[in-house]
Image (cartoon, rainbow over all chains, first blue to last red; front, side):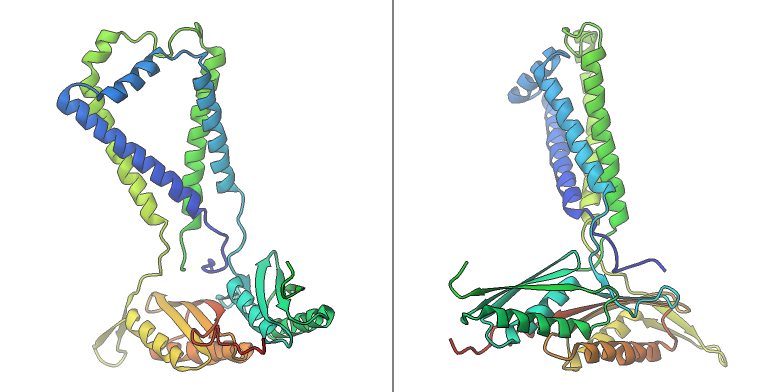
Length: 183
Length: 195
């Protein structure tokens, strides 16, 4: 069974930028070609560029810079294509290749659940959550000065909520508590 | 957001990357290995012949640029995420000669509406693909963050999906399910505090 949800991130942004750049350059060049065919001469501003290109030698710094730039951009694109991105979802215990069942959880959903449980905790004014590399980091603000108790309560509540979800890999939970007004 | 074709995008990026590296490498090779490096790069082309052939060159270049523009447009359109398309399932009667056709979009919409009736679910997005003999489920359920997570997930697994299979008349050959948690829009900022 091929996966549908449990896949690595696609390189959509990089491809979109490259495609838009190529599209705009090719359309501009197409318009210039049409002007050349209709009028028999290149527009004045492009004639200067074409003249400079004809006079360019192999020793020109511009040519070397162009070569280096092309290689760097090409290597960046190759790297983006080859290096695997992170998974977009987390697998649940219910997932089974034998039964052809793919069960996944959206990391954003886990963050929402953690934020809800953190904000429900006594003493918590506001919470924000980030989820990266199987670790949930919870940032909490509280009006209470005894932050240690609030921190322990938040961690316990969130861990209890996550324990109820049949995730195939455990998630580490860490909380950072700031008194309101602190930064 | 539903799925884009990650493998295809990576292949296109790799091809473009290789082309750019090759082009940069060719320019670099020419700089260090070309004889008469202080002469113009386009030296050797007779200016007169170049000018005479320009209209033909421009026509061929226009065709190439038009193809390149269309290809870029296709690549841009392919980056948009898509949902699996609905199918038309044909059911043949075993006893009589009747045929029934069902658009899986109808069943998907009915299943989405049925799911949203349950207070534990905020949203459901369902597509049924595959074939009549091997239907495939693609589903994305958003559960309320203030409901019991495991009860909500069991509702999806033990009731909503089996109900869809009953409507189709057979079990799903494949199930691809994503579960999400979200806030009820009217409640997300209505927390009461003593401050």
